[in-house]
Length: 230
Image (cartoon, rainbow, N blue to C red; front, side):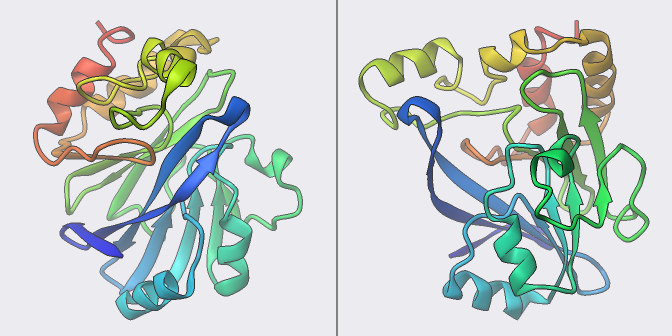
């Protein structure tokens, strides 16, 4: 179930999730092993016994990260399974899930426990969600949740496929969906954040909903955000 994605980083595919109007999406999480042996879990998918066994074989789960306010469906299950793990919330999630005891909000300031290995930048000013984008230095991987998407061709059918194509969720490479583009209420703040992301030496790009990019990731990001950063 776990797939090696580079030095000390793995991915796991989760079940489909159904959103508004019957749109369904594939899901993906990432597991990063820190030099201490502790595990950083990004955007966790549904926790099964098999997945838990594979994760436990890698190390101790210490950090559970919800990278935006839409990525919360399975956080509580992981926290129950790993009560000693810290839970980190993207902006807006604490207010949305008051039933979860988050340990820290992702406000853009470095997290000492993993800042030597993992950087992150919050892309603010979006009416849908403010997303924390991560960069794993050792593998050169940028991790996007919903801000970049690329559904497989044929994933949706009928009018949903038409809408997804118009929304730029279906295309030759990952793109920022049109609904996210128009939802930015503060483009200056978003542009500043994205410019910092483009400065990372990105080689690979992972998304929760999209085909992973395994080379020339920085060039892909420049193309994906050309509409925002000239």
